[in-house]
Image 1 (cartoon, helix red, strand yellow):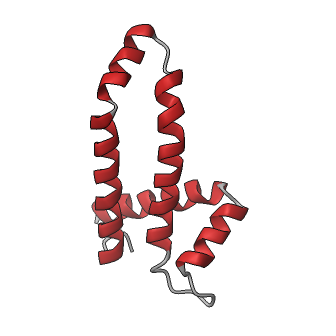
Image 2 (tube, one colour):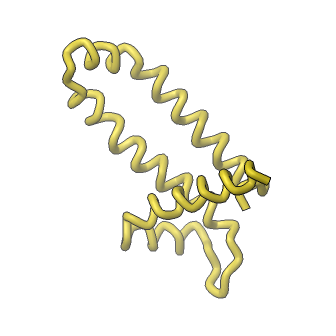
Length: 103
């Protein structure tokens, strides 16, 4: 449930980290925009956001109740084994948020 406490908390942490990254690297991003070359910015952004996405997906899945416990360790192992699952979890989260907003 995307409106549960742990999911809301995870989203706030995600947004705060995203905003901090954007503020910290605003000058570099502007320089890259002028040059039409984002390779330097992307070299920082891609690994940062991959880790941020992994952390966010871990936070929102650890609260799920299933037959097998979704612990941080189990979820981290899953994401290490199948990295594409991170994107799937985040997509499912946003779909659930959109569905709740329609209600």
